[in-house]
Length: 349
Image 1: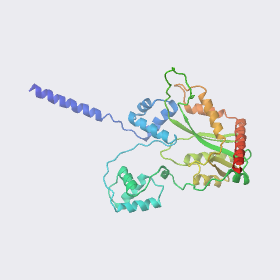
Image 2: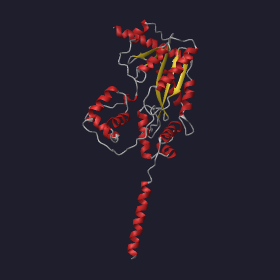
Image 3: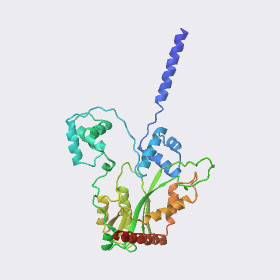
Image 4: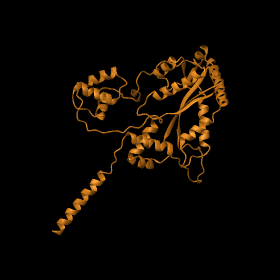
């Protein structure tokens, strides 16, 4: 009788332990993800400590940091919700998917899922099942660019010579724009360590900064606030602020020079610049942008003294940006002019 009682007690204890293990999983939402990223960016907390403060599971936290850094510090990692598939894709639905993607090449996988449900009137297909079917059966590739609306420009950027023939003068009617990533663990590349060992540096999380300079000095620097999906809105908003400054200083019709990066050379970006009476100039590959020298000085000033536990990176970046003088900007632009002329001379040989 006592043996039976002991066995029943052990079973009850096992159930209690199992219930506790199951309840250890932490639920989290998008606002907690934003808080987690902010803790990593501004306070330099470790992934473990930031996860504890924001209430995110530790294993998930490492994956979120990986996603965020992979996006260049501009796209917030998303919470992935795994739902059990309640339907299956039939043969007759394949043509619908192909036709819908042909007409709407920039829709997300979620939107495809919703349209399929509307069209066939059946239970929702899981995103993973839909993705596999589109890859294997429909030969459709869902790429990162699909999050963006509008079309990417496919035309070849004008050469430097063509722009100069049309009146471009680097030190007279140009401003220069670029984006760069900073990291809380920004340190010197060399450090003291024991002779038989190497000092390991942990990589932190990125902060994206966009800036613009002119021959007369800096125009604007701004932190790129992370968004859920890749979008042109940060660059569009920054360009609007830049053009507002140019309007106030009678610099209408200036050339806004930037790299021919995918996010910069979007048709909507060029259209927004042209609509305000300015000209968007996209540098050809290997062309020198004076913003590179600007970022170099800013990074040097950040690295001069190591960040401590009380430091936050954004204020340090702000102070470093304020160290850029009008004389610096003019010198960098003059140097770029010499490099452009040298590049043109090489092309003529």
